[in-house]
Length: 218
Length: 218
Image (tube, rainbow over all chains, first blue to last red; front, side, top):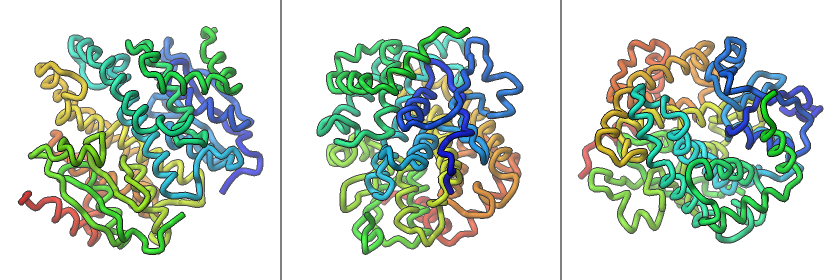
């Protein structure tokens, strides 16, 4: 089932410096008609009763659809790709290629994002402030090693993660690449990841949404 | 593109007490014809040169297909569901329902599996043995809270994660539920999760593969 109006009547909840950027980028790139609502993490709006009623997990992204809410970046990315097949952002009719793309997105959410979270969300895994602080130490190495693996496994043969075809994985990878500087990794030491980031920055949708996310909270 | 012979000529690499159980269960349940190869983590076979040549990430599951290897549980589960549509383990033609299922599987890999890993794989995030030890403390609470959330969000209205329809998410949830005892959570304190686990144990494929995974390594 799809919607005659594309993504009109969809609302994306996003916050700066979060993985919600990936969903926002993909929705902008496919030309979806949607509402975007900023969530101010500095004011802990994601822990407000209203927001927790929307998403008990207290995280972004949330995509409100006519049939209910969706969460989790890999799921939202695939949903947008399915609703906008003409954009070609996922090999929908090729189970092997689709599984390769989903494996990539799953690696980003379950391994790379988690490495980064040990610098900024260590309290998820320990209530001891000294341990939370200690968890920041290995983040630089882990993020570097993950991106080095991605360079080796995905960025050797073409300009994009899936080779010649731009896919949801490219927007997701770009999103996590914007965290490298804060995590202590100079992306210029990873030439293929750097070239990929610069290539993505040429896309109008990326320029528009990155600029929006960089604006100060009112 | 699918394969005329279903999954003949596919090989799944698995190890006991790992998330590879989910892929193994789903492949057995759909009646796939495949080879299964055990990887002995106690002997660190996943770090052997031969295995790293197969999967540089040094993890299970790995599914060897005629077109190359696939990794990451959510991707393999969806691939098997696509190759065996008659099994009905994913709502392939309903983007919203599919996204709900993928959001569930993504939550399991990026949040619940990660919580568990802080008891058994803490060295991923710290080289300090004292920190690795300290990371075990919050695992019981995190696993309990995650399963309580799953009960509330997914197990209220029907026997399965997606309601009335058995899906890949049920086999994945069952897999992670087998870790609860080791993580210090008595699943009987979570009545809906416990009922789900017991319901899954009625399936012949679950009984067969669980028995295989429980056999001692030769």
